[in-house]
Length: 390
Image (cartoon, helix red, strand yellow):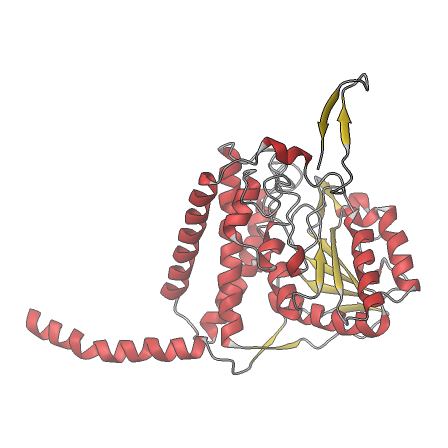
């Protein structure tokens, strides 16, 4: 009987290998697949784009892998913070991964992105590495900002990522400035200036938007509406929580920010619009699972049932998993294997980041003043010369 079982298994081996290789060919295929967004878009002063989005098996699998990586990375950051290996402010992005992945799929690295302090996953989407990410979070030399920026100040200029910013709403005027430079240079690229629903009431946002509209700048203002500005629900802070309509004279689009393909379609549409007609506002209806920052348990101003309800019905990673399975691009086991592989990558990056040295104390004086001016630093009495900076 044992011999018969072994013989049957041996006979099936080539068949399973053939199935695996067929699936491998399928998942790397660039043949188009048509999907429909979970919800229709809602437009303000503009006709919304089609709900039908074209993708490929390769893109679908990359969406799953990237979002699984982002999710695991943020959960690991939570543990590192609780272990006191990450200090200071730390804002996690788990739940909002579809915005980072969908936006990146619609644009190029020549387009610019600037965001607030919930920036880890945007940085990874722009081509940053896990080692750079965890090193920066732990204040190490190998970090993307040489360990001097921390969680809120990730940066990758060569890939069009202009940061992480800690001042609420201040990145939006900077983003409009980037768009001004793009228009001035005539380089046919756009800037995505991202902010949250909490920052949507900032005066500087409206001032910057007014100038962007006056000068038809290729600026796309992206409001990541996760429905809570710190611990304040949107309805308590905004008389009009329809953030996509807030531009008044500027067109807007409301998007399901938990659907990576809706985000991709909206960002592609917005880029085409901004290059021809100037600014547009995208409101991404999304949700964060963690609290606002690490000092916020995230359950005092909303119920646990609300959080688990969003996880069950709208989770962005699970939506992609269902699409992958429904198109028979991978099995449940293969997707679990990807998640195990992702976990291993994250653990390896953390181990490497822990080995990275702290910045040299002399780094305190770099990136502060323009080089070559021989700036002198004096003591409090202005008599004792403390140092001459390069």
